[in-house]
Each structure stands twice: as C-alpha cells, then as structure tokens.
View 1 (cartoon, rainbow, N blue to C red):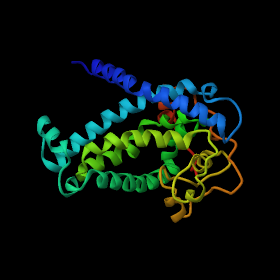
View 2 (view 1 turned 90 degrees about the vertical axis):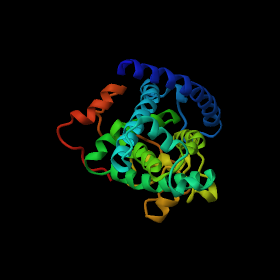
View 3 (view 1 turned 60 degrees about the vertical axis):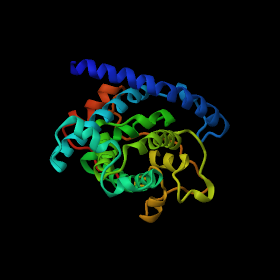
View 4 (view 1 turned 30 degrees about the horizontal axis):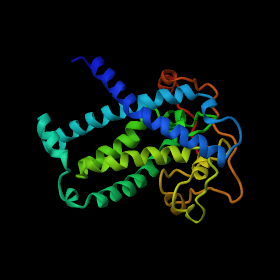
Length: 280
C-alpha cells in the first residue's frame, strides 16, 4: 500500500470525522455569536480566509495523527527497546507503568492540567525569536473566528500539541483518555477563538474565555494571555490581560507579506531568509 494511498485514506477519514463537528460547531457559533458577539460585523461564514481555515481543518488532524504515531514509535524503540509493531500496540493499549493504574478520570485530569501548564510555556516560547515566524501563521487571521482554531504551522503542531501528547503516552497515561479529551480540546479551542463577549465573570482568572483569548490575538496588545484552558497560569506568571469593560477590536500581525492559502502559509516561514523580528 503506497504512502500516497494511505494519506488519501487518512484525508477521507478525517473528512468523515471532522464534517459532523464542523456542521455542529458552525450552527452553534452562528447562533451564539449573533446573540452575544464580541465584535460586530460580518458573520463567520463571510470571514476573510475562511477557505484557508477549512483547509487547515483537514491538514492539521491528518498531520498531527501521523506525527504522533511516528514520534511515539521512534521513541518507544529508543526508550523501551520495543520494535515489534504488535508489541508496541499492546504496550500502549491500556497505558503502562504506575500512572496506568490510576482511575481514568484522574489520568484525564492529570493530562488536562499538566499539558496545559507545559503548553503555556511552549506558547510563550513561540512568541519569541525564530519560532515566532511559525506561530505567526496562527495569528495572521484579521477576522478571528472559531474556524481559526485549526490554523497552525506543522512546526507549531510538532513542538506543541504533538509533543505533549507523545510525552503523555510515554509517561504511561492510557490512550483511552483521549476518547473524552479529544472532543474537549476541539470544543474549548473553538470556543476561545469564537466571536463571543463571554468573560466567565468571577472565573475569568481561572478559565480561559473567548474575550481572554481574543486579547491574546489583539493587534495592539502583546505578551499576554498564553494559556489555552486555564487562565490561572497567566495570572500566576504575570501575563494576564483582560481590562474590565473593554473588548479587543483589531487582529492580525504586522507582517503584511504573509500570504493567504494553506500551502503558501506552510512554505512562507521556511522560505524567509531573515528571522522574524522578536515578538513580545
């Protein structure tokens, strides 16, 4: 079976699994953003760059799936000395080591809290030095909407979600937790990117809200709100920014040369001769 055929199969499977999510999320956020929008203007289906976002919704799950498998297998061979495919499957089937004996809800909680803490620092790292040019792809949307949640460069995916998920599997956590964690991550990621004026009131310093994350994408604000799920990390480490009674307005990046389209955006950071200016 050729690699091209396998990739085509994965794309079709991704479409099969992603399409119901896109339909449900599109209807849900269409109603919610009409009821309580953060920024008045065009609806999400008239968003600039919508087709690019939809391409990322196919590309990112397929790429992330393959990179997780390849990294996990490679590191399993190196760290545990297991090279047989069937043995690797059995090794990870229900997790391994002490962590695998914990109740699944405890494992899930450890994953959510632990990976969010690590991703907070990884996210901060992507806003500095040479990594910024890869993360800038995610910030390029001038119309920030829930569809923007999947717009990530492969380098960002490998050193972000891919890295922490592989580390979770290597630590012994059961892959069964992803049955619940997977949908949770999709919904929360789309929620914080949605055009909603929700601040979560008294929980604003604990849980990341749409307004909280939209301040992170605001063009005139930098160096704030890096947490994906728990705003608590930003409050603890001095990067929290959500002024009372104010809402962010403009989004995007300073680099006006950033192209539109999936492939142009994947190639653009790689083709840049000079590193991007340091982002705060």
